[in-house]
Image (tube, rainbow, N blue to C red; front, side, top):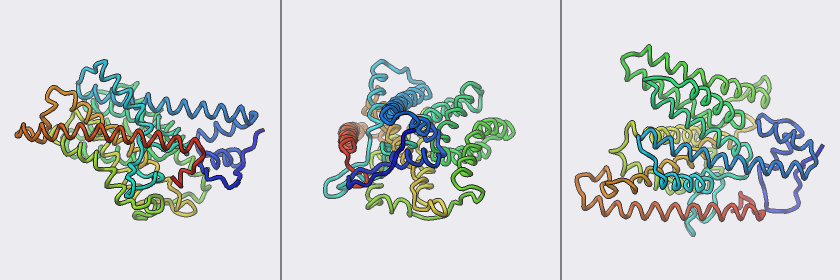
Length: 384
């Protein structure tokens, strides 16, 4: 059997991979990817390392494919006929999504903040494994939710349940926030619909799809903490302040573009943009968890409650750029929904809106690629 140990040789490089590989071999792991690593490293070390690299690369490709499917699903919900140009742009945006990273402003936000509002965290294997299955679960959920009051497609329900289970088995961070969002949506539909029995029945079926994931979390909790279990404590801003320098400014800079899109498109929000709305709601829930809650006991200062925030941050940018692109390619591209009564102002604002969005996307991808190159050269992600 191969062995993996943490060697302190003075190198600035640090990664969760090292710890996860060692702990998977010596103590086991709650994650499916940890179980895979454990059996991989029963092979010769070089072979195991190569196969693990291939698996991580495959997960990244699966993430790109999942984002692409998400964008196509948002088109389908909007009733839009996706053109070949749309498909090409969506593929490039899907590829860009794995490089979108926190904004770096020299002299203001001078460093690549660790876990500071971005979906790109290559140093953590359980997060990388969770990400594609979480996006696929969201794709199937949107398919179900869009026709929830009319009919069910049982294949979508099964696929949703399986993807959610795999996501949770890799890392439970997405499920925690998503389960809360699902309950909130159920309560909202119960309050606004007269036929409460029918709404209850449909949401009960949907909630039953989450049972395998819930059981998975309970098993993971037992594996990590034994019979004592684990607790959740109220800890406002604890995790973010520990992990992100000047987090208030970092958050404000991060939200600049998504809030701009939300403001300019606010009159267009509705059933056809339900994907964008759901992703915003997921972002709110996941960030509430990261900003106000923490694990009790020995893992209080770990960032385990923050991974859902990291995931939803990147997803929010993907959804915002979907709205930005589709406004740019629309027949009335100069008529922004919030300025329908002022064509001159709308045209001026639209031009600046498209330029700003395009330049920002190019800058974010440049930063993400540069960050990846630095990590590949052995720099510590905690020091960049």
